[in-house]
Amino acid sequence: MSGAVDWRPSASPGVLRERAQLLARAREFFAARRVLEVDTALVVNAPVSDVHIASASVTLGAAQPGTTAPPLYLHTSPEYAMKRLLAAGSGDIYQICHVVRGDERGRLHNPEFTLIEWYRVGMPLAALMDEVEALTRSLLGPAAAARRGERLSYAEVFRRELGLDPLAAPSSDLARAAARFGLEARAADAGGDRDGLLEFLMAVAVGPRLGRGALTCVHGYPASQAALARLDPQDPRTALRFELYCEGVELANGFQELQSAGEQRARFTRDNAERARAGLPVAPADERLLAALGAGLPECSGVALGFDRVLMLAVGAEHIDEVLAFPTSRA
Image 1: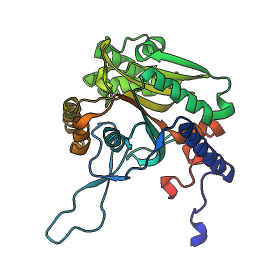
Image 2: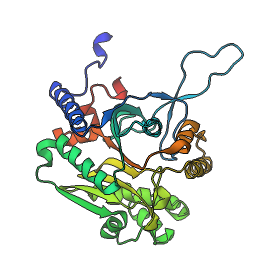
Image 3: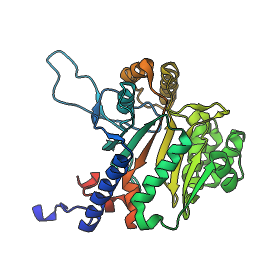
Image 4: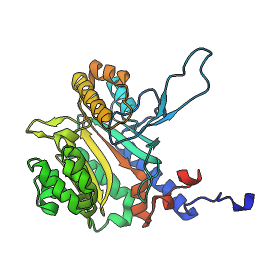
């Protein structure tokens, strides 16, 4: 029976060598900029509250007799821990780590994947976009040589691809557009979940057309999709957030980071209300993060880059399994 077990890695030796070279190149990139590498815990005490991200829970050992072991989670990003380091005075930091997100599997998704996440103190979002592009070009190597850099607003890409203003169009117009792209009629007719409609349209109709022959940063996301980003003081309808696309693939998500503990708690509360409406588990607020924000997070911007996806583009892979030694299905 042992001969029937699929024990071999899904990535070739050549791709594994390329993976190691790109990781070394990333570390050289940050070392040249005097950004400190840090290493935070994989197992954490609080899940993310984002309704679109599923945290994987874990149990470490048995509880003492008569007690219940507290729930623990595998981090979906090192963001909360890294912000605690920033509040403690770390200065510029980066981390290369594995993260886990439940319910994610497909050509571009494995439940466990590698993020490069970093934070720059005092750096405005436009400068961080430049830095993300510079690192991505370094990692892509020859695959980036002919690509132009592009900056477009979220409103611009929706107008260009769908003829819709995502900040002003009524939900009924968004629902009709979503139905044209395959969203079930009953879901589209509901129309009440405006962000759900926008995210569907970005995923299936707009995003796949971005970054063709380019490295495209899309900025100015709706304020309702701010997550942990600050709102734009010049246009409070939008957030100081961007995403990087290349050949229709989202590679990075960056923020001008929210510093207010009170506003962050309010966002956690709104997320949990949405989770409850969707029948999802309610996520306890990360009180350590809130305490760190209360103590004072420095003015900073941060971004997470999907390393495996960049590697896919660099080597011409069609499926994420081609760049992983052992995807979850055969781990």
